[in-house]
Each structure stands twice: as C-alpha cells, then as structure tokens.
Image (cartoon, rainbow, N blue to C red; front, side):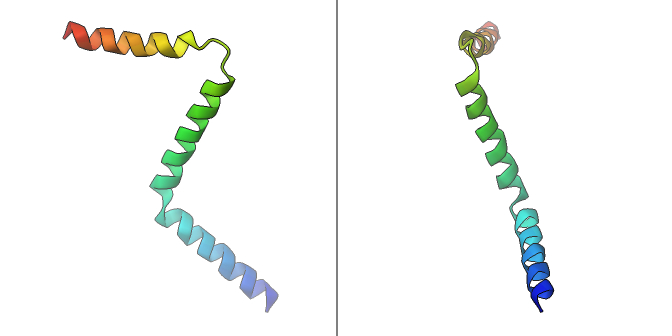
Length: 60
C-alpha cells in the first residue's frame, strides 16, 4: 500500500512537470542568469554586450 502511494506521487509529479515544462524551463534559465550575474566579477562584460546590441540596432 505504501509503494502505491509513492508511485502515485511520482506519477503526479511527472505529470506536473510535463504540464508546466515550458514555465519550469524559462524559470530555470532566468534563475541561472540572475545567479550568474551575481557571481560574475567583471560586470562590464554584460554591459558591453548590451551596448553592442544597442549599437548594432542603431546602425540599421
């Protein structure tokens, strides 16, 4: 009886993950981006990347 309850819980979890896969994936990507920018020592790398994109858009 205990194993059936665990199996039902695991199946429910799998269905939950499949149902909300896109939201979970986007959330993980955003979380990793924020954590990465927090721990990165050279902040200007991110700013330079933003400025390059802005500059490329201005040239169009």
